[in-house]
Length: 83
Image (cartoon, rainbow, N blue to C red; front, side):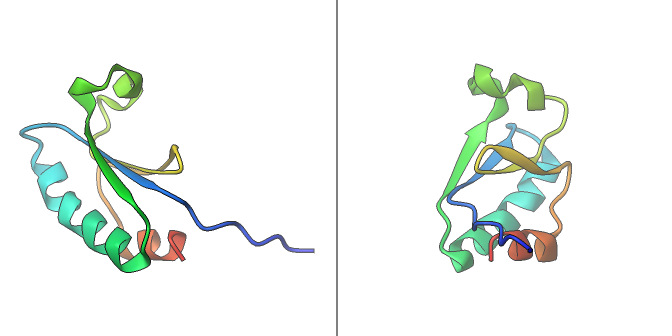
């Protein structure tokens, strides 16, 4: 029997000041999360010690705290994950 995965309850976008890839990805993540009705939190990796493991991988998209993507955002894949 197939199990349906549950829809993520939150999206976290991990960014860094001055990161050009982050600046390109953030509007995409904001748009997809808003359309899906999933709350979005944007966090600067350098101001949050708990996210230091992602320091070399920004931008990072976390769905319920689990890595969904690193370095770039595939809009279609994110939309699908938030359904």
